[in-house]
Image 1 (tube, helix red, strand yellow):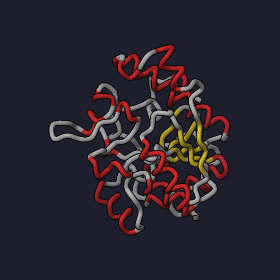
Image 2 (cartoon, helix red, strand yellow):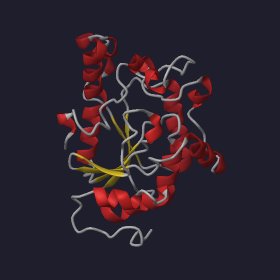
Image 3 (cartoon, rainbow, N blue to C red):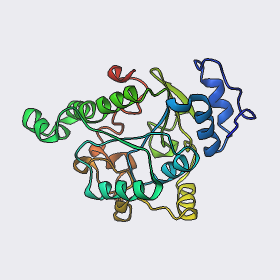
Image 4 (tube, helix red, strand yellow):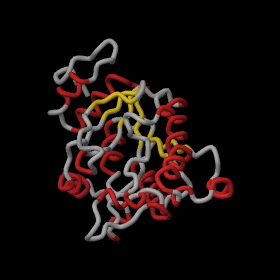
Length: 247
């Protein structure tokens, strides 16, 4: 896809603000196309295979099927998530790359106990071991320069100020569906005969590890469905505060 009509291709991508402003009015597919044009083989995508992940997976597999799809498997995913991964892998023929923590779940619990039950400090340590380190390793091994992620502004207060294109360390993050609403997600899934995560119908709106994900109740905010509301972000998409993730 030629993106020259939207934004001029820079020789060196150092200043992302003007680019992000121009891509603000582009479509999701145009934003992905821009990433493909700029970064080529240095473009990757991450996916948690969460509630609405089929949208981005379908877009990228259709437009740029060679793009590696990074999945960080913590070892604590729901059984339904593993089945969802297998189903979408077969259907979309994803270039799936799975990365595991450097220490198994069983060994972690012996050494540290159940970190997700140890307050914010324990949760942050859990996330560094099980999510941040494997993702950091994935980006390095794949030589990533550009990173597609399916974050949306209306998902939480921590994401409402995100831009279409941002820098995270030395990586350029691209958020193709950053401005999409739940209605647009539903329409895309319906029009393309794509599924929500199997747990969606049981009230799970944000799906991560089985021990720290709760279905949405009437008296809860979306952010309270993860880690009992103690922490919304797992560290993968935090622009600051994670020096070990600044690759």
